[in-house]
Amino acid sequence: MKKADILIIGGGIAGIQAAKTACALGRSVLLIDRNPRLGGVLPQCTHRGFAGALTGPEYLAAQLADFPAEVQLRLSTAALSVGSDKTAVLSSRADGVWRAAFSRLILATGCREVAAGALGLGGTRPEGVYTAGQAQALLNLEGIVPPGPIVILGSGDLGLIMAAQLREAGAEVAAIVEKKPLCGGLIKNRRRLEPLHIPLYTGASLRRLAGSPRLVAVEVLTEDGRALTIPCRSLLIAAGLQPEQSLVRDLGEPDWLYLCGNCRQIHTMVESVAAQGAQAAMAASNEIGEEDYD
Image 1 (cartoon, rainbow, N blue to C red):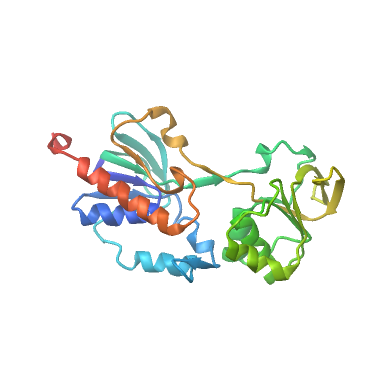
Image 2: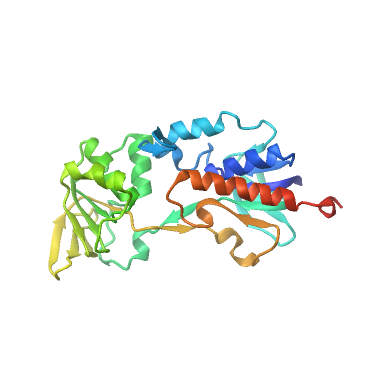
């Protein structure tokens, strides 16, 4: 069984900063991530705005420039379970199923997107429905542009960013639908969208999907009660994020568990995610006592 002072599950920016901080404080660190590379969603965030004017990949590269070699890093590794005995069951294609023991656990698993199935939409279940994050990965990592016309559900930052990037990639964005009375997102993202003149329906709700096997239209109930049918071939769901805590949900609140980043609370700025990762590592490192080595 592999052992470490601190096990960190999640290799996004919170996990990266936690690993760097704990290692600097002299703790042995095992960092795992289910993806084949560190960074979480940062590699697909090609827009600027991280730490000022950096893209996601640029910001990630800066954070990894001084990543300590002492960290035990296991990528393409999934955490299957965490036990109250301070052990975790892990799995990877290279190593099979194995166990790790730890004194402290830092959970940095990020968040998950609200999917279409959680929205109670009527109609068919056609092809062409994506979360905004899935579409972002397709566009910025694979160079695949979802077919237009495209409707985006949600006017938060990711929805606005994707609307702008899709237009820049040559796709037709037919509309943005927002259930709240005002457009969401940061001012800089709203300003980026203004010259594109994409129709924005606020105070509106998406009611039905139409088409089989492929999406052909969505039905929207507008603020004034009109039922509006918008032809489209792709729908992007940008309806919100939820902290991903399922791995430790049944553990209660043990004193050896620390949550940080978007799995603790949803952050709007990457700098606060990084800071919380470092804070979790400092707290975990300082709480390890002689009894942990008995």
